[in-house]
Image (cartoon, rainbow, N blue to C red):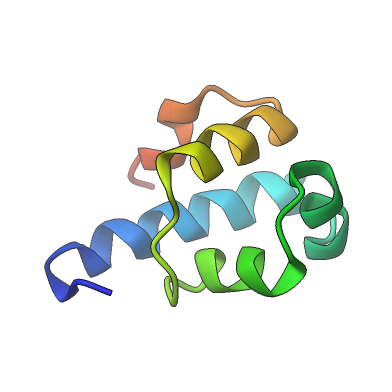
Length: 74
């Protein structure tokens, strides 16, 4: 992963975690909803993997939030 964008990936991961927890969805359930592995979801949430644009669209859709919400600062 590129350190240059690490803070951005941390923010995206935390936003995914926030919206997932807000809706009472487990990592396993989100994985099933998006066809990604639970391990991959966990890596995205903890900024240990760089999510593809497609993955971000899939996750935002599964969480029923506009994709731009995943990029917002808190």
